[in-house]
Image 1 (cartoon, rainbow, N blue to C red):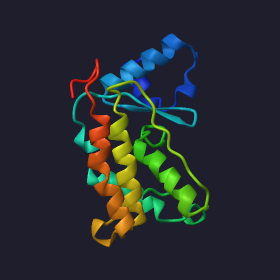
Image 2 (image 1 turned 135 degrees about the vertical axis):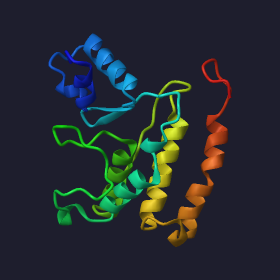
Image 3 (image 1 turned 90 degrees about the vertical axis):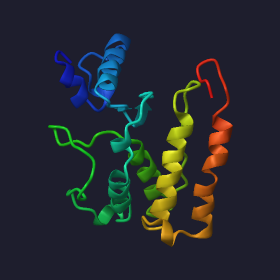
Image 4 (image 1 turned 30 degrees about the horizontal axis):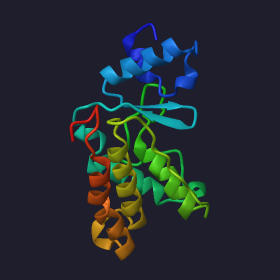
Length: 178
């Protein structure tokens, strides 16, 4: 992390040469400044609210690349990436993203028949509601094969419930002037 771009290349805080609180906070700060809002720490995904729109981070191209990848069972996948897939760093590893978590949950249910839980936790104003919306949208669209027109009634109801989630998540707090 001697160079600022070193933290941008470091997707997993477990790879820090010296793992202690100041190094973790420094890496997160450098990634935040570089608009890298997602960072892994082992199997957990950390998200830092950018407090600004980052449309390229959640665009339909990126969403559809993850959905396309999730539609192929793990044992049939090769090591190639879907066209339009996430950016890679110089070491060839994928940038961490909430769609990875949603994809892993989808694959656990659909391809391995295992129950899944996605835990979204954080302080007031941290972006829990927004993150949950991204997960819900991914799961509904992945279940429908990637297109809203082929959604079942249940998948449509999942997406239609997002405004209710927003209403519950948008209470006025000390940190959030909703």
